[in-house]
Length: 101
Image 1 (spheres, rainbow, N blue to C red):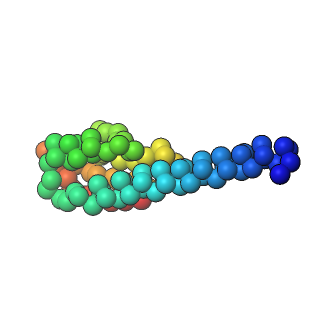
Image 2 (image 1 turned 30 degrees about the horizontal axis):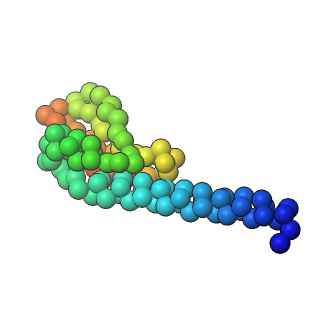
């Protein structure tokens, strides 16, 4: 091997490793959103939902206040927010609807 090929091989190997790690994290973030979203059903309390969402390592949520209730949007920046879980709560803080997008 020539000394010029070694740096090129190192760059290719590093790019491969970075790609594998990125794909792994993307998939883990996706699974986290889908799995946690599947835990919620109509009638669940806001406290229960928030406690479960707070266990996420690769995703986060935001609360949007709306007339007559609120909405929690749970997603991950690691997968560019492709997978999103939307949890709609009524004025009493109980889940009305849950959906993924």
